[in-house]
Amino acid sequence: MRRECQEILPGLLLGPFVASKSLETLQGLGITHIVCIRDAKEAFSVRPRFPEHFQYLTLDVEDNEEQNLIRLFPRSTLLTIQFTIGFDLSSRAKAFIDDALREEMGVRRGKVLVHCNGGISLSPAFVVMFVMEYYRLSWEDALHLVQNRRYCISPNGGFLTQIKEYEAIYRASQAVATYPQAQRQVMRRKRADDDDDDDDEREEDRKRPLVDPTPAPPFISIPLPSVAAHDPDAMEIS
Image (cartoon, rainbow, N blue to C red; front, side):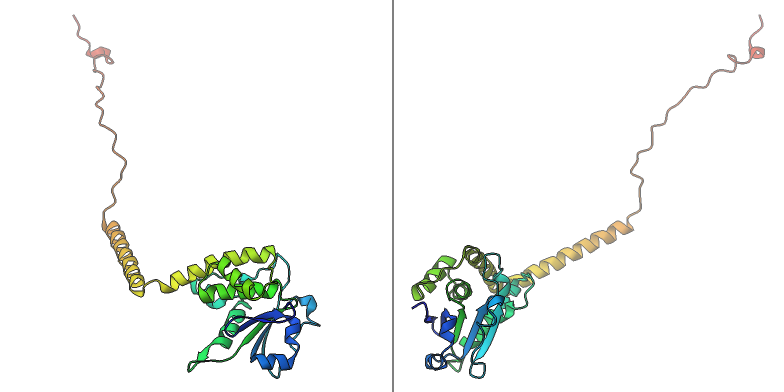
């Protein structure tokens, strides 16, 4: 079973690299798109085998706990709320799968196989994140759904942590996307009104005459000494 691919949801299959090596098997499954996720060190052996028959997306990803998977996954979700973590490949993983599963005239365009070398940790982490958002599940439910289809998956600790983090990200994205348009317009008008009020206050302040706020010291009357006290000629002669 580990050497075969399994259908996780209609049109989305998950498996190891060996499952992508048989043209007859792939065509028999109706595969049209293949996501090849590999460590750069595996590029010589883990590579697209039939580019003339299928649409490929190849992602070079380090298979270790330090690898940032979220940065490589879903631009279509994260950029909705401007989580700009430096996406380049990000638009490609989810958009590629979405394109394969998109329906035209009520008919799904194709099927996509997502694989890494062993189909145990790396590619399952991508599929769990996709399933989580596709069905709007918690990370636990999405992980269990994928495990129930492919029993041998076991994302490493770093990938599992990112799967948990992705739940909060995609839910925040959906909250922003579903925020009532009318409410957003009301908030924009309120901000505009507040700005106008601030402008009016600044204009009034500009026209108001400047007043020295420092109080004047109180007037003190100092008595002057009498002339007699200092002029001997003014003294009375007896």
